[in-house]
Image (cartoon, rainbow, N blue to C red; front, side, top):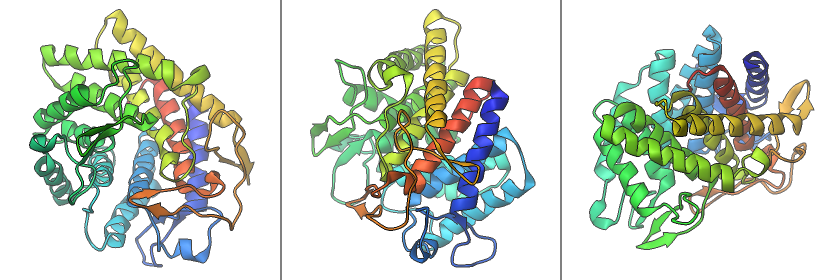
Amino acid sequence: MDQLWANRAASSEAAVTQRHLHRLWALPGTQLGVVAWPSERKHRLFGTWHYWWQAHLLDCLLDAQLRDPQPERHTRISRQIRAHRLRNNFRWINNYYDDMAWLALALERAARVAGVQRRRALQKLADQFVTAWAPQDGGGIPWRKGQERFFNAPANGPAGIFLARYEGGVRRADQMSDWIDGALIDPETHLVFDGIKDGSLVRAQYTYCQGVVLGLETELAVRTGAEARDRHKARVHRLVAAVNEHMAPNGVLKSAGGGDGGLFGGITARYLALVATTLPGDSADDAVARDTARNIVLSSAKAAWDNRQTVAGLPVFGAFWDRDAELPTAGGQEAQSVDGAVNSSAIPERDLSVQLSGWMLMEAAHSAAEGSSLG
């Protein structure tokens, strides 16, 4: 079974590699993901590039390197990191803490998985999250810099996962998880709310908010002492059950269309796979959480694969895994940034985010089936 998912993950990687990877401004030793396929010249010039989509492209390359280490992929990983900094005006940081958290997670994994070290970048990014901590204002860390006071799971979840993995960061990651648990858990469904904006609860519930909190609590269950470990494991048990009941009809994760939403399902699958492979403990509740997480990942991956389209022998994944994918075409409404978020193309399958999510799901299925961690 794990070879089946390895083959599907490899096909997904090949699809993204062939359709989306291009040099940045024709510079040697660089590479970024073109945000649309079919693409136009303006896309290949990277006038738009979407910082956090590129971070997930890097993460997917690292998943693949774990699955099947290859020298040429190591080169792609290095090129992706180099080009990210160049396109971001020779900087690692930007104004969005969730963006920076996704890059930090990918760079930390690049050091461990591929030996591609960016120590100064990691320290700069870690400093951003530590100094943004604002309990006096109701956080948490905010979503973005500036006057807005919006403290949300999409920023605190991935930043917390990174700090849990980063040297000296476990204590702050523990505080972030406690803030999420105290401020953002729906008492009825036990799902994670989006955040708190200007003191008011934003009650939207997105799949990827559940995913990042599962990742954070699982990392802390691994990295804390016995008393704290039991607290974090209990939160994982509760949240996996909530996702299974409310966000995976017929065992398939809900999707959120294209644009930024294209990544939501893949992120959730990544951290469900982490639960399946990494959550410690021998109790019945531990086993149920791991098995449930694994089943959601594998059921979602089977549905996404069965509903894919195929072009030149390679998959095109649907924006909604439980229905047939639509083949994208050039033209029409394109994904655009609006107030810090990227909306969907007219055909969401055209968006890099949607195809990355399918690839991420296949890597998660391989990890869950094989029992090896993507952490």
